[in-house]
Length: 102
Image 1 (cartoon, one colour):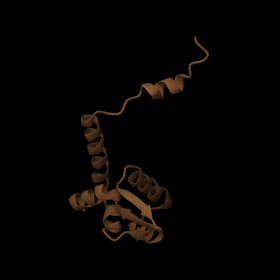
Image 2 (cartoon, one colour; image 1 turned 60 degrees about the vertical axis):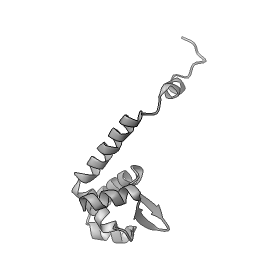
Image 3 (tube, one colour; image 1 turned 180 degrees about the vertical axis):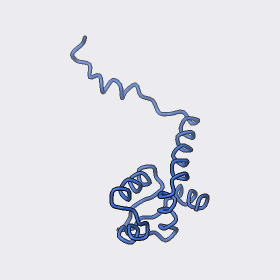
Image 4 (cartoon, helix red, strand yellow; image 1 turned 30 degrees about the horizontal axis):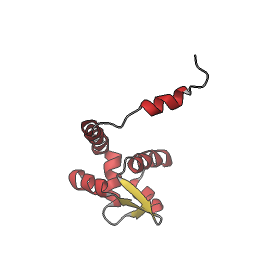
């Protein structure tokens, strides 16, 4: 075995971007994960078009700290929400999801 080869780096160099079809499929899977979960739908509905600060969102959602962080991290990571100036706001994807499931 060649000692100069970094296997992890080699793996990531070989990894390619998904095709357009695969990317759309992944997007639909993420949208499904939001739409079938009542807590995530509720968070999108509460944030609405005007946005909410974290404290008010926690109070209105009724979620404990663990589940609040779990769902918010998911929504932020997948691009449904953004955090700006101390407020959570829906992204364009979040607005589309809000309009279709809330």
